[in-house]
Amino acid sequence: MGKQELVDEVAKQHALELSGGLIFDTVLANRKIIANALRKCSHSSLILDLKGVKQCDSAGLALMIDLKRLARRQNSQISFINLPKQMKALADFCSVSSILQ
Image 1 (tube, rainbow, N blue to C red):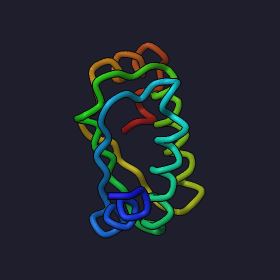
Image 2 (tube, rainbow, N blue to C red):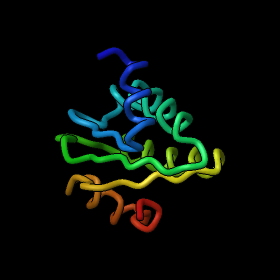
Image 3 (cartoon, helix red, strand yellow):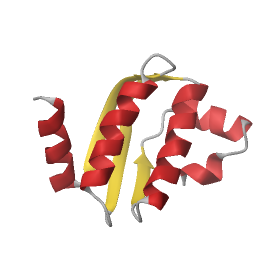
């Protein structure tokens, strides 16, 4: 499935499952895909399922915060489910857990 087909399918389901890493090397590519999906779900809500994310760092956490900001600007909502323990711990340490709620 190509990127555009993925985005179109996400728009129908209003959900996207991420896998692999949310790290410095991958956040830009992930942001592009998620931002396109969010645009397709405008004035609605997108659920981002992170159960397949095996590795994350501060760049991944920053991406989640940026996506919340992007959704708000588009009059949409984005929710995160199955946050990895590593991301939860980092969010707690940085005192930004409430943003991910």
